[in-house]
Length: 262
Image (cartoon, rainbow, N blue to C red):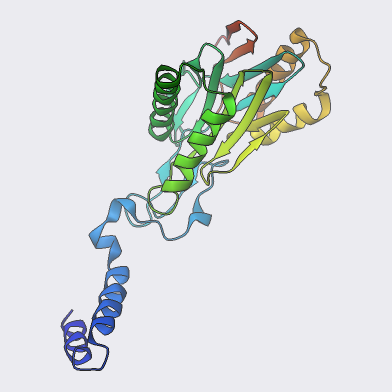
């Protein structure tokens, strides 16, 4: 600290005193930023791994944050969106809850799945519900599925460099037609025919890639979503307990739950 002050004093006698002071102060601040704002410090976002649930350099200078791992699936067919998710919540190797809701209703025609840090995901679910209601009250028009997905994407992108939301989201619904959007912590937004998120997603993708067809019946689509999540449950220790399935269509919002014994 003494050296920095001396350099700043000498710099103040140069032809560019203000610039010198600003630069040296900045250099000092970035080398001690962990002591100033330890909660917000993230050195490298490449250390964040949603799929395997590891986040480094977060709360305490390199400690690992425990992320609840999961498996969620979404797919679109002619007249419906089908969302599915397991019901287990974990904190590291500890099973913290066995009847978690990972598919959240946003409106009567829209829902979203969550994976990642539970608290972060809950904040975004509440935000999506609030902005959807506010938009309808102010304009008299129901927001489209894309508008809510875009809003969430903007939040994630805006907070990325300082306090990123460690989540993966699927936003599905029916406005003029069935739609499914994928959103990740970087603010990536893409419309998909089918998608999986969470630690069990590699296994779920294998089932979806092989079996998905756009001309599937609703019963076939529900069975495929269920099979994709169930396959992940058999290989992913952080997913389990049961499966929730939500079907959204024109004037339809239906939820089914399948609990496993044991």
